[in-house]
Amino acid sequence: MTARADTSLLELSARELSAAIRQRSVSAREVLEAHYARIDAVNPAVNAVVTQVREAAYAAAARADERTVVTPPDELPPLHGVPMTHKDTHAVRGIRTTSGSPVFAEHVPDHDDLIVARFRAAGVISTGKNNVPEFAAGSHSFNELFGTTHNPYDRTRSAGGSSGGAAAAIASRIQPLGDGSDMGGSLRNPASFCNVVGFRPSTGVLPLAPSPDAWAWLGRSGPIARSVDDVVLAMSVLTGPDPRVPLACPVERAAFRTLAAEDLPEPDARPLAGVRIGLTTDFGVGVPVEAEILDVLREQARVFEQIGAVVEEAVPDLRDADEVFDVTRAFDMAVNLRTVVAEHREQVKPEVVWNVEKGLALTGPQLMDAALARTRLHEATQAFFGAYDLLLCPTAQVLPFPSEERWLRTVTGMPMQTYVEWLRSATLISATGCPAVSVPGGFSPGGLPVGLQLVAAHGRDVELLRAARAYDIATRHAERAPVL
Image (cartoon, rainbow, N blue to C red; front, side, top):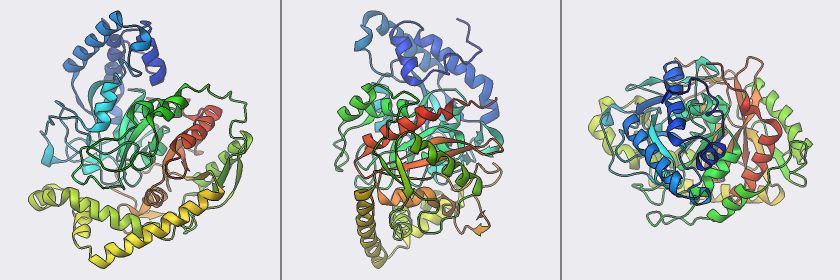
């Protein structure tokens, strides 16, 4: 079979692509050929995909096609035959998983992480791995093993991170859907940089399993896609508790399935009638944000009003969020990576070493103060969402920056002291524990993508995605493809 040179198949959404395979309009092998042909065509420019398993993927596609022949379409899984590279920090059985680190350059797991296992159970064909910063630390996807992932909309710029390889692959039409993770913006920031959608669920909705700390709450797994509708479809197969993680799941998988089955609103409808949205440009704590991003935010706020929402300036009291995030992140980094740093210090990038050492230096009073601050932050967030349904704010503080930089030292002239400080627009929201989604909001005058961040109360993931999908359908910003 000759590989398709065009992107006609891969312009389809994951929902459309799987439906076409289930209805036998196209075979899983043909879709896989288009997937790999696209990798061959564009990956040298963007460096999103770092490991490929073509022989195993074609065998899986052949099995999928055999199953298609003997199984009624409505009995096949929702993502039947859809090809997907996975984030290189997610364990995938039988596929090299390096976490972007020389320490694990030849590591091949014998198990799937939960998000991968659930995607595969839903019919996904695993085709390889996509790039990350080392140990997913930082929001710029570069490492010593594979180099830098470049932004499809401007290949001199960063694709963000840590799910930067996934975002770049999806924006480049290599695949419609991917898996990611997010502690301090690692789904949302690359989504903003690459004009795609990144969703960070509420705690417990998609457990991080297996995990060395089953009670960890700051980091999340979640999907990334070119449309909110595909994110909804993904959550309809990913959601649910896992016995290895004792955190409660506040949303039933059936709720996402119901949302996935709802009729989509017409572009000229007012599906957000009665929805109350608080708008903030600086998160109430003086977060610096580039002017071009704020211009897009204010312009798109009017779109939310046009589709029915009431938008007014309001923000939760986030004064405790920095302390909660910084202490919790340092603690989690130390829990997860202290042994690696102790045994392989010279092979680990300095930002990771710094963050682990910060965690090891935490004192009892610091941990106690952070616990009290988290309670105050929760109360403030609850109060805000008693008055508003959603918070609308910038996803990223900056436009995609030159890819030769490790991290930004200044934002709008304000010095940044650490490699995560320029991500406060995301980390402040992470500290609240609330679900958040970055949706494409348009472009700067220079043609760089701008993402908008929508946040809802804990457990209101379905309502959040319903509103985000309505905006996404009204604007269709992600349909503007990069020129590669």
